[in-house]
Image 1: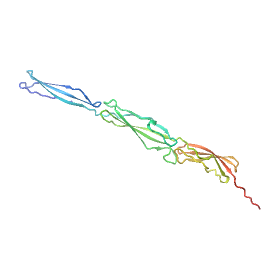
Image 2 (image 1 turned 30 degrees about the horizontal axis):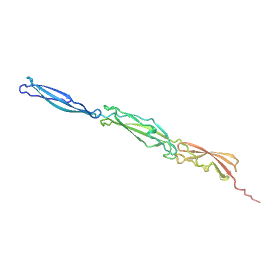
Image 3 (image 1 turned 60 degrees about the vertical axis):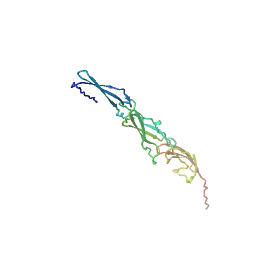
Image 4 (image 1 turned 90 degrees about the horizontal axis):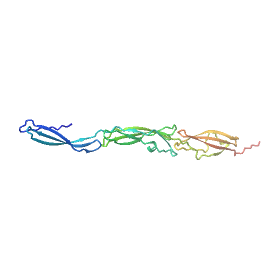
Length: 257
């Protein structure tokens, strides 16, 4: 509080009476919560004989808002899961996984401006294969919100973590593999892969195993129904059947004694 002080002298009255009054002018608005105005003080001295004299003085008063908004309260999106496509790619943008919103309180500004941004962590791959950086993974999306009031006061930031899971649920395929295969009887091996191949949307080194060799007819010449299974690093698998025909194209050797 600032006080206006005045004193007066008189030719006859040793202590003339002094009265001080003031009038405030109109407010000049600035930003929300800040303004200024002029306060005019008037001092009037009166002696015992009723003689009166006045003087005025203007004071500029500025009211400033220097209090920043509170740290925003973030209403973050829930944890999300998206799937990898045939190209081992996905759309994990906020448009798909959810946007964060925030509110903030301020001493003067009823609606402070809030800036929201996010940053993604490095991926953590979760499939238990022999290849790195292939298949399913998770990452943390950290949202940050900061509020600024109308007077430019910026408050403390607040953060919110969202876990996003990117899953590979596509099994390998046996495209390009032979449904039928012919081989000479003496060359057939039940542990050898015959004209089969498997590819996967993410795994560059798919594991192929022989699940069964079922004899269909005879021994040689005969046939087998073989079942293969292809498994990627994320445990997705598919099976494939192949008919293997055993050929006997070698004539007997005749020995005459």
